[in-house]
Image: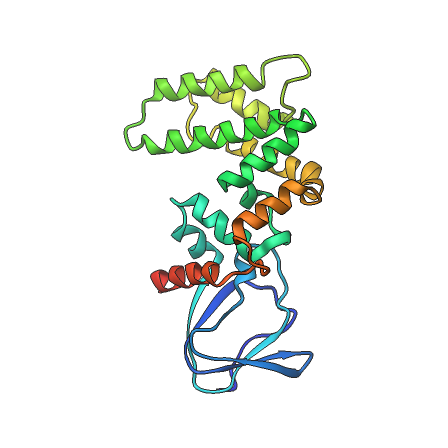
Amino acid sequence: KDHVVFEEGDVGEKFYAIIEGQVDVLIKGALVRKLGRKAYFGEISLVLQNTNRTATIRASTKTAMLTIDKKAFRKFFAKQQGLMAGVELRIAGAQCQLRSILCHPKGFEYFAMFLEQKDQSRGLHFWRTCCTFRLWATSIDPQPDLAAIQTRAQEIYDTYLRSSDASTIILGEDIRKDIEGDLKNQEADAGSYVAAESEMMKLMSKMHLDNFKATEWFQRLLQYINTGRSSSSSPEAAASVAAAAAAAA
């Protein structure tokens, strides 16, 4: 009782689901509501970076809660990227990050259509090729076919990075050199294109995310995700996170 779970303004790191007891929700010191058994809070912190808490949560009775942090959340959904993306999109709504959009099948489809209208989809397809390569090369461990990995890594380089024309993907010089070094030394592996994958995500977020969110494509995505609900944070999404919390406990 009277234990402060977190303060308004703190950086959020965990999601909470109440098993027993009750907590007070305070904004600027004023009590705005109480939450009891089966209620949840803090879910937005799992899907957005450096999110500040919008209220103070204080236990008003003896309270037991399940918690899950970002690392455990992602581990729980590690082999279900599409499901995780759906949960993230439902929780974050218009504040979602590009990775959540691209890891959801319908999100990728709509974002690709948006870029194709601008004739700027090549970077997106390179990013997806890098992701596919990483997952494929990882899946064939612990006895990887090194020759097959080398061949596929070379094909990606030849398709997206070797050409001297306008279709060439522009990467940081260090990233390009590392890839070329792996290929030259016959050392390509699942990690060879990870830095390129990350670099493309950052570039696409910077160049296209805000514009995409202003389009009908993005509104269609949110409608698809929320199946007509007016709230971007659905009970089903929170239930999925609560299940992850229970599994991590």
